[in-house]
Amino acid sequence: NAGVTQTPKFQVLKTGQSMTLQCAQDMNHEYMSWYRQDPGMGLRLIHYSVGAGITDQGEVPNGYNVSRSTTEDFPLRLLSAAPSQTSVYFCASSYGNLRELFFGEGSRLTVL
Amino acid sequence: ELKVEQNPLFLSMQEEKNYTIYCNYSTTSDRLYWYRQDPGKSLESLFVLLSNGAVKQEGRLMASLDTKARLSTLHITAAVHDLSATYFCAVGAGGSQGNLIFGKGTKLSVKP
Image (cartoon, rainbow over all chains, first blue to last red; front, side):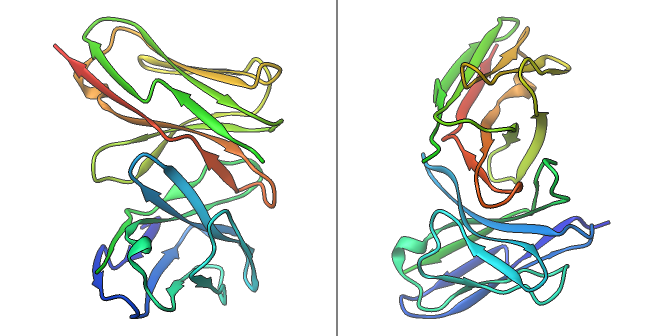
């Protein structure tokens, strides 16, 4: 099993550009989420999904969109990138039921 | 609003000494997790604590949970260099059982 796979690992964008961070898991987890990690801030929840067709906002959802058309995939879209979105993004999944999160390797995004 | 505070944020340790990292949280939660992150890497699950008085041990690390005090501790016994990393505690938040609020992390450095 590959676990949680994120692509790309690195990306540089210009302000105003759009892009999608991909996340796929092969563990048949119902729950998936996106976090961003900034220095000294820990990880903050952006959006999450408890199953295909169901998404909701986390702590810091502004500027990001998500969708969940399949159990396996949970892409994160930046519609108009801003320098404040420079961060490392982590996708995570779990079985739910109080089980721990499994994290992807992260995607480092720089917005110029 | 759930807040999670870790202290210390930085810990320089000598090998073979014992240390404790503290994780306080502001509102009632039914689950607490500890993760490890090596520089530039993803997060690795260490412990899942789901009940008052829960204690988990793995090697030189031991985690405990006091839900009445809203406090978890991560105790390091006889530190070794391999334990150098950043350690995060995360507490279950509302919305879904998968949602977590993370502390800012404790950067631990073990020196000979």
